Image (cartoon, rainbow, N blue to C red; front, side, top):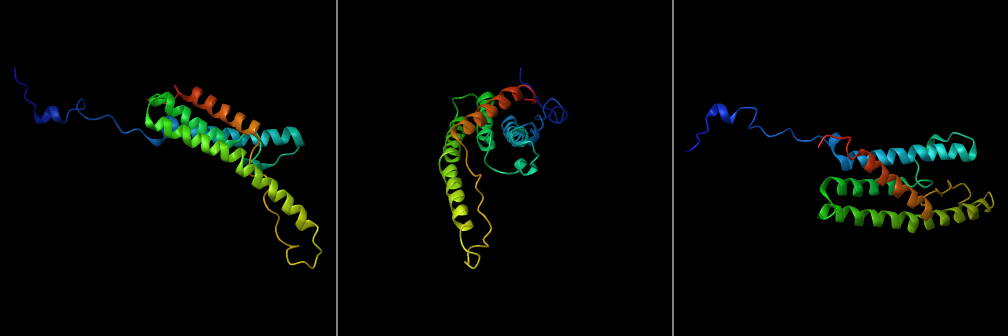
Length: 169
């Protein structure tokens, strides 16, 4: 028997598509931002534990333990893997992005920070009349040690693992 679709059927709530998911319910996005926030907060706690002083600049600064960059990109990759599986191109893209960011954090940015430290020492030894003696010091805490990158990566995976069932599908 042929079915006939009436106007009433077309506008019934059964035939309406489900609402579009919000960015606030996106597992990859929420996991990435949460991993970043947790890593930055942990930097402040670790600074307090080591130096016995609160340094709120650690909430927004780069470098230090754990790597928030690594936590962010690994949380993103892990969440995509949990949500869409590991066989898709989006997961592959996220893993490659994570590898590049983590390599950069423990390689190029780490060495740039060490160079900044040496340059700051050189500038401090200039006589007062030297044109560069009053230059603002370079930011030294830029990169991460391999351990800081690894801990950030583990943190990102852990955040995504814990978030995987907490958001609506």
